[in-house]
Image (cartoon, rainbow, N blue to C red; front, side, top):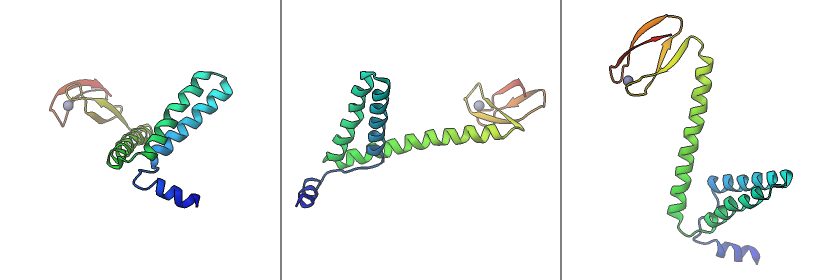
Length: 131
Ligand SMILES: [Zn+2]
């Protein structure tokens, strides 16, 4: 009975996705922080992601919600890639990473070569740096 009512109620609505789960987890963490620190602002703030997660789950504009989720996933992938790049660079002790002053492209250079003239392969800017 309730199950049938719920499935009819949810018909045409977006439902849950990764972004909604992340919002719910954020709300949970904020409310726990609020409980333990006894700062009411965290408790109040925890309602924002909670309300947004409920809004998204019940929304009938599925294309918009899907686009939001895709945007979130690509943003999250960018952060994940940034961390994995940092981790890989910290393991690479034979090279140093310098940004080109012309185009801000990161260049991988061998360490311990002293003062060298570097020519950026992307924009052909030459600059002198100690590596
Ligand atoms: Zn450059």
